[in-house]
Image (cartoon, rainbow, N blue to C red; front, side, top):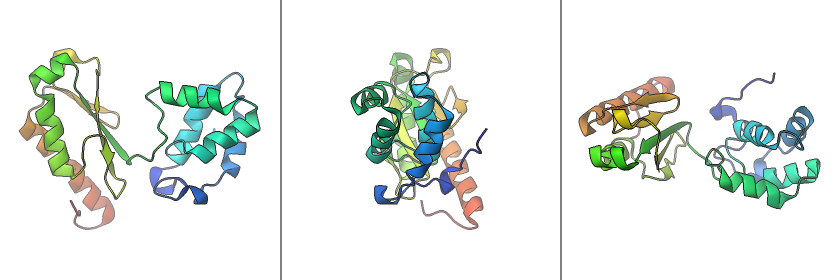
Length: 181
């Protein structure tokens, strides 16, 4: 199994698409048969590049013989795929009915203020992406957010701010100094 490439080493993250290593697409296509496992192939490509830019999708289409229109149909249908770069840390706030009523807007606002990132956007340093989602299936813990693979429930704006500050402290310690947020 190939080594998972950390986002800081990904060719596509924060890079101009002219700098993409399209030779890696050939490696991925050789590993995964696109006629049988196209979604798995797209997941692997997104894992490597950090997102699925147009040149990567076009290269997959060219190498696999799968029409680009079919690939774009899959990429735009499934929420797991992105055609734009996203942050190293992905934060999702549930805005389903239960979470909305329980204060999801306050949670999103607290994150936006503390992390200096707008809802639906990625910070300029590519560290955090913040997105509101329709439902996370954890209504009994409303309001809920997920940071990478960790889910937090029964949140208040104050608790959310503490979590955000902890994320910034972790970022500062990784970078060997203070954060710029």
